[in-house]
Length: 127
Image (cartoon, rainbow, N blue to C red; front, top):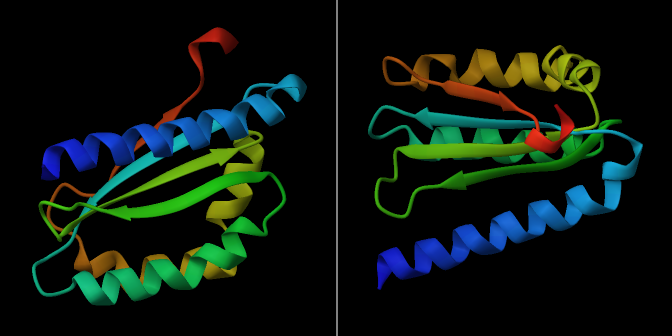
């Protein structure tokens, strides 16, 4: 049942992301970022509170289309982000904002070795 719910939830998130993409794609291809994070056991709430603190300012940034944090239903130390940006320039600007610099300084010590794993992607129809 848990796996079925996770699959359905994943499909809903994907459908929402694609709907947003379809609404904005005519002006050019978007940049997608998927980041996987594993935090040290016992630091989940600290990470979650810091992640919640950057949602609003990030979503207000010029060029941001989607910005979500998600937590694994099976392993509470695993989180991911799904982001959609109008361009690489918008993403680079985002990474240098004061709220992101503060976020990274607050959570950098919480990550397990080898994390975060970050993928920057673009729809294959754009290439």
